[in-house]
Length: 562
Image 1 (cartoon, one colour):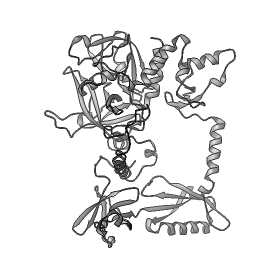
Image 2 (cartoon, rainbow, N blue to C red):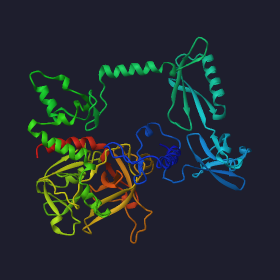
Image 3 (cartoon, rainbow, N blue to C red):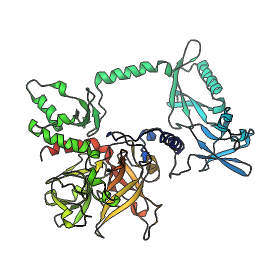
Image 4 (cartoon, helix red, strand yellow):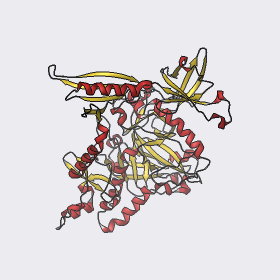
């Protein structure tokens, strides 16, 4: 979302949290939602729609004051706050009756023309004087109406544009619509753009007028359009999920979109004499290969392996409920306990990973390409005070995401399988995988390894909003990646911190569960690349939440063969 609107939402959210904290009780984490109180802070992560419909108010650097409006008159300046797309909240003392001479702008010097001043008439009920009465200033936005047609002579699209200000919007729009109908432009269309909100996203208003020369808006028959589209999707069962993405079956069960051979139970039914085609739950395509929506039960390879499948499913799905006695350690130990050093045959640390279950480690695809699985080891509990707590296990297999791209480093994620389960101690505890695509913890830590200094590294870092990073640093950034910068607000005795890290370094956030403050560490990202990280530019991490369904499916399948 834009800086203007994002900050509006942030301001209102803060008010909601303060108001709700007095009456609400902390809720137990249910695997899909997070505890919302003063201990846990989250940031939303924008979706691709922002790229499709760029907003006008785009910021390049996050500011704590981007929701604040400066209201200037003569030599004095007071403040207001954006409370939605078109209104600024202030006071009558700040905005007098002769408000038309005011100069209002955002802290980045963006001017906001004002169309109207509205006073809260029941201000006396607040026990304040008229000078303190709440006032709303309506921003004078503009709307652009475009008559779009085709000139067959010029072989070119043409348009006539009318701009309507907010203060006269209704009159202006009605007049424009009437004039368009009077011209009776056969074969043309009328579209509208709100210049303040969706400056690059025209919306169709109408294609024709009725017999009374009145515009017939598309909204009058939009229900029919939606019904036809819906029927079409049902008729042709249009798939829209990709390999490894979450899907929902006809019975409303959550699954993962996988190739048929990754769904042993479904594949067995298809190969049977009866050929149970109803077992198919097509959810997409991988090239020309159809994908099937596979539930955990569909991944069962044989009945004698059901216990192993149930065990790994419980370990992953209920990760936040496990190992409580080992998680309640010092903050430093919490972030070291899931760190896995991946060593080559010469016992050199090639890269690092994150322990996500007793027998699996999550890392980057680049890391796996640098090692030989059969001669590599994983070392855990490396910060333990006594050597007996340090565990070293052989790597028996590796799995790189099938869509990993060496050129772009997209899908830069991989899984290591260990020869035996790790012994859970306070120095070796799996991290849970962050499942939420729409947001992430606002406070994050990276835990890696400095191969030069031969020491564990821990850094406080700040995530950037998706659109901010695309605009300022990496134009090719995708939603499966996150931009991370070191926390520059901290005081460092030596050189300034960098975002650079070893391949596979984990990005972690702690979430406190229930009323007893149970800390649970989540791996939010895996270090991917940092082309300019040494020049105070952000590093790019692979977002675990984007691959959560795929990772779970692979663990469920591989665990059955251990």
